[in-house]
Amino acid sequence: MRRYGKHTDEDDIRQRPNRKGNRPRTNIRPKHEEAVEGMVLTVDRGRLTCLVEDRAVVAMKARELGRKAAVVGDRVAIVGDLSGEKDTLARIVRIEPRGSVLRRTADDDDPYERVVVANADQLAIVTALADPEPRPRLIDRCLVAAFDGGLSPLLVLTKSDLAPPDKFLELYGALDIPYVVTSREELRSEAAADRVRAHLDGRITAFVGHSGVGKTTLVNALVPPERRRTTGHVNAVTGRGRHTTTSALALPLAGGGGGWVIDTPGVRSFGLNHVDPSRVIHAFPDLEPGTEGCPRACSHDEPDCALDEWVAEGHADPQRLYSLRRLLATRERREGD
Image (cartoon, rainbow, N blue to C red; front, side):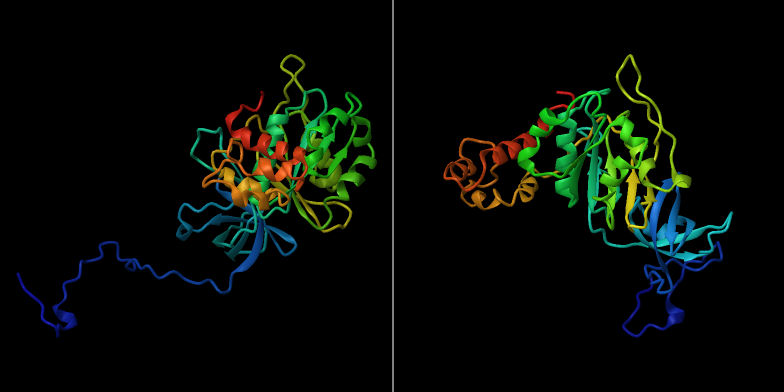
């Protein structure tokens, strides 16, 4: 075996022949300084439709991104053909840091985390007051995901002509969450859309809710007519809606308010395996100072929790503590309970 000294010449180094005749691999990646920023509007079987300036551009993810996936709402850097013309394809070379993330797992035992939407400012949780019946546990889970992901929640209650909202709103009064109540008749006019739009102007809002609650119908009332999506109906036997929205889609808000709405597929479960319960307390700034006396790794729902004494001394509303503990318990309960 030949041993090389300190002063080897290039000719002394053996090189493995490149049978393919292409360039050798390198860890140095291009910076793509000429890349243009875009926003992901929807994802369909590996093709991503992005908004670049005022046009829709279809792109695919560059191989150099590896397994990193882009989702609706992501800000991305794009190179290639950006004309937006038919049969053209650009390339996404970078996914910019996310300001917020809405995530879920299939259930509480599933370790695989799914990013639903990126960079949304607000989460509109749509629920019907009847037909189908509201599911408070599912709403609680959506609230936890919103607080954990950095989104402000908004409750949108539909079908108020079938049931009054008062009793339902009592459950969330202590959380001080903004809400809008609509009826089926109002959705046929501009009245309901205008009230909801007042909470959406200038913001990116993701809409979630289980099938049949009128989520897509409401979204259609908020976006330009040419952007409206297909709607379904509620099964009279099961009381559940049929999935008509199969992929998330970002749509511009009508009326020139500069906002965006993101319609997402109807959900029948919302797993929280990815959520660290210790982060939920950050959504309760009036209770957070009271945790300083808590034992290490306190779940805030145990006998030694300092929040009990904090609230008893009058520092916060007892209903706020009840709401916190109800949300923390959602990981241990099924949505239909």
